[in-house]
Length: 285
Image 1 (cartoon, rainbow, N blue to C red):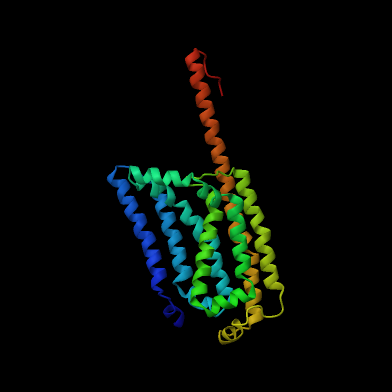
Image 2 (image 1 turned 120 degrees about the vertical axis):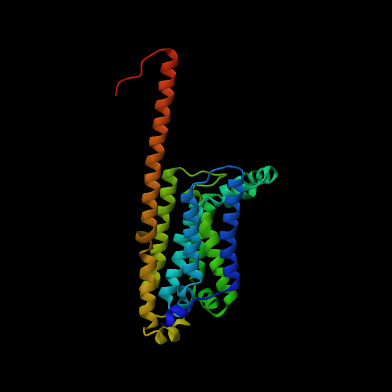
């Protein structure tokens, strides 16, 4: 079938993805040499994130994204709502700091707590850059330019991943952070993202005129109309909240409950220790 021959092998993309996997493996090797442990779960989460990037940027999804807006929308959702949180759950910053030498570790920690890192790590900045990038990239003039220019298209993908990492980093909260978000704040940030995505999806879905003209010919060649394909793309973005954001909120909620349970256990342990030092029996039940 033609679709299985539609993989794209952009050398820059391949080098970037291979470099990420190679670096992660090298850093793990450095930890093992020092006798340090690293959760295997984090390694597989990072690798899964890279695999999602491969699906979005190398598989037929990338080739057909230039022919159908709906496939392009799937690609965008993979690049912004699935791959970034998986990569961050792999704790790459923590791994980089722990695998660095003493001098490198000191420089990294100094930068992570510096003014620039605090600015770009601010949750409001990450949210605004992420949503702003999504909206700007779907303006017809910019979108058409990205379909006609490989450089603009590559820049769009880079902006998606970079701003998505800024948005998801304080929500995932697995790496050293200059600014920590509470669990309620993480839930609120995700909650605010849903209407932003829904509004843009509805705008695309509700339009009866073709918003992105290059798809007129390519969608017809694929056996559909540009308007029908556009409606499907809008519906995909509209449903992104249920597909990606709501599950993320559930994960944050579960993590919040587990954190409270651990804190309660630590509090009980401290109270028991204090009672034991005073010679008082621990309460029953």
